[in-house]
Length: 266
Image (cartoon, rainbow, N blue to C red; front, top):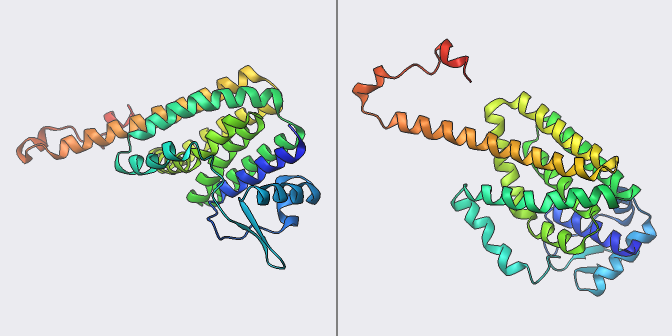
């Protein structure tokens, strides 16, 4: 892959990560070069390529603007209904997790073999931003950085189709990441944060070390941890809802959930 094409992918990922809409202006070339870890010349060349494709629009003396969403046209009809489906029925997030398992296992495996020095630096920056937002308590920004971390790994796979599919799933992935993180933090915020950070760090390190098998195992363990934690929370919620529907005269017969003997089982 030519450097210009690689920078184009990074620039498109940045547009997706910030959820820029048509008509919004991109950061200045110098800032883009710093964030993407490339030269201003490479950024300028990538911008010119996206202008020729109709994705960006340059306004003399005013900057560069997003002209159209950079999602692959052949994926748009299939992806459009997913966000509304998940909003209507949260159980669809399990389908998203299964899809992520299939896509990201391959992405992590390829990234560990193909990631360049720039790719690795970008993955590390995404990880650091995610941890920074977690520590400062910005849940929404942490969720967005979480999704961007996974997208950075997909970009490092250097498989254009895989990258396009992951970008197209970004909105869906982001909405489920936000919901998953919110629910998981209700279980045990400090422990959950530590577990998620450790899992992301292990995945990142496997890619930095070029260990493809370990990278694939790490993403599998991470997504399984998320799935099992969310399922456990939903089962607890359903159990509580069932107890609320019992006749009032049966309520005194139920064990107190705050009783010490039950607490020891949680």
